[in-house]
Length: 433
Image 1 (cartoon, rainbow, N blue to C red):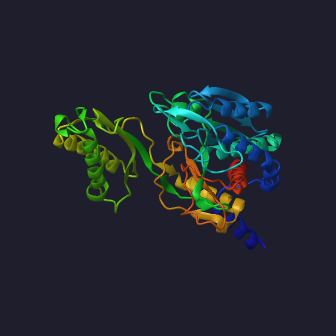
Image 2 (tube, rainbow, N blue to C red):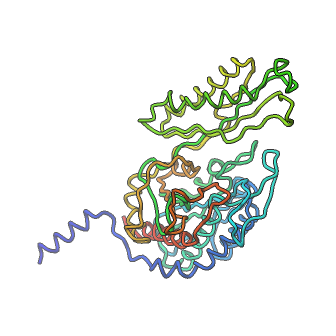
Image 3 (cartoon, helix red, strand yellow):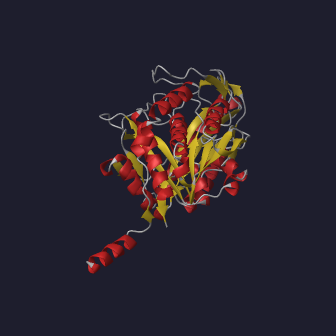
């Protein structure tokens, strides 16, 4: 018997930190499911672009006040909201983050709560849509806040809730997003041991959760290239310098940066042009053409080299056409690689398996999408995971992707996200080191 006790004690020691009895996550989540769905639909129908999330922020802040949270701050990084839930027992400090902003996309989902909002973006009228699922993120975190607040007296530790604006990037000429929240001291007033975030994702089916230890999502950088020619009549191209032809040549030549200049057997690289703007009439060759786009990388050396290569291509090709160019590569501070802290990941994966079942937890490949959650995870150990959005039985590879006007969220994802985030949070808070 003595030997059996010794073996049991040794096994417990090898298994790591001991966990106190955590509450029933399923029962807790069930109390907020209907509210999470209602919040998500309401936010979806009233989307707001980055640094303009006034209505969404008020919804979150009012909810946190009603729950009795402390240190509620609004207007952080323009429209962000932070608040602290202090449990009735001593324990760890963690942070949970949701992004709030929508995209300049005209919705074609056909949902009864489809967005009809419009705005002017970069000088053009467009629709506004939660085409990336941030409406779900806000609804889920509001639900997690209510569930945790309902057991405040028994809750060990403290939780910082972060409702972040402008994850997709602030408007031109403005600051915003995670970088601005950090610059304004969000982790100075409350320094967590770990930070957690999630993202609904079209490439997984509803019911699934995806993760990856270490690098998960790419670094993201924007570029802006203005090709300057000389305006002339379309019937007399020799009378000017055609920036449209030069811009087209720049776009074509830029493809060789990835295909011929980068060692993509080492790490993947993407260079994509997202917009071309120039000219106004069919028979006028304009003065200039603007090109904007994105660069995605996982290696800092490759990232720097792509900057230099793209600038060189733009300048050299423009010169060959007799044009000039102003190439801002990058044109703003980008997002670094999103990295899941390996030790934290190993600690959290069992929580995901407990929440959704081991067979539904998927280890992901590298993802070329980017997230400014990466900036929070540079300050403290971070863990970011994906929640499947595509209905079961539908091929997620063929489903409309995040950022598509037809992006569709199976609302089963709301239940999965709520349970996964609750399980991760409670298991971490109830673990005794």
